[in-house]
Image 1 (cartoon, rainbow, N blue to C red):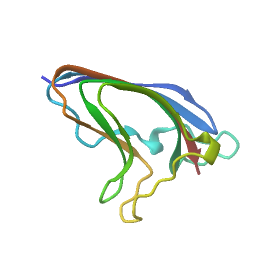
Image 2 (cartoon, rainbow, N blue to C red):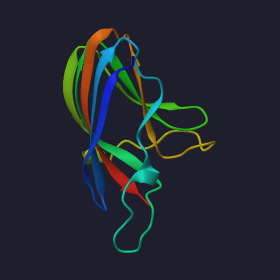
Image 3 (cartoon, rainbow, N blue to C red):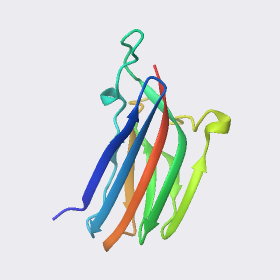
Image 4 (tube, rainbow, N blue to C red):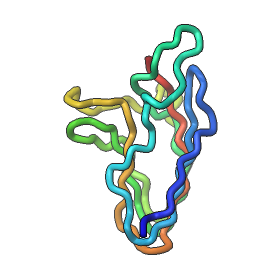
Length: 135
């Protein structure tokens, strides 16, 4: 079996995307799974430019039993933000323009990946990510 996961795009406009992620684990967990694929986000309506990256403006989350690492995708993934186990929070980075992608330029895609740690059967998370799109 595998963890039961969902990824639902709530908003995808010229400026931002809001994506809801859920997981109910069977104990398998997730390892560097792409959750925000910038190439799959809507193009800018004014000129058709493709999204090439994003900044994390807000992370609203609840975890039960497992912790979650958000990662900037690159040849060597870089930690974007850690979400503690058995915790809920609403972290707003919009006041500073969002968390910048700090991944090294080698293989940098602009995508956000996710890894769970300490997962066991019936552990879960719900995460709502708000990202500011870059072109």
